[in-house]
Length: 138
Image (tube, rainbow, N blue to C red):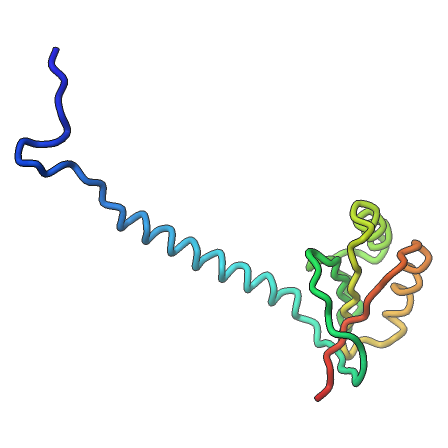
């Protein structure tokens, strides 16, 4: 039995066209960039109150973000939770990574009566550090 060569006698070899593969990869990259931006926008549905003082946000790897909307709906990292499940979930997350900061993003129009029980519950759960997120007024 004779071995056959892929290369033809005129010197032109078989070539693989990678252009369609590059096109597919570029479409996937654009898709994931858009999905990532949409995920960030979902977290940003809360209107942050302004403040005239405070510290600049420290960039950390993955802070735990607690959101409170103006109607009192709670979320952790963009996932909506019932208030009865909030404290066990935040305690579990804090126990898994104790050095991770917890950032409280409350809507500007949320009454303090909605925010206070959440802050007291985190204090009672022995969470040592909760950062309140605001935007600096200009």
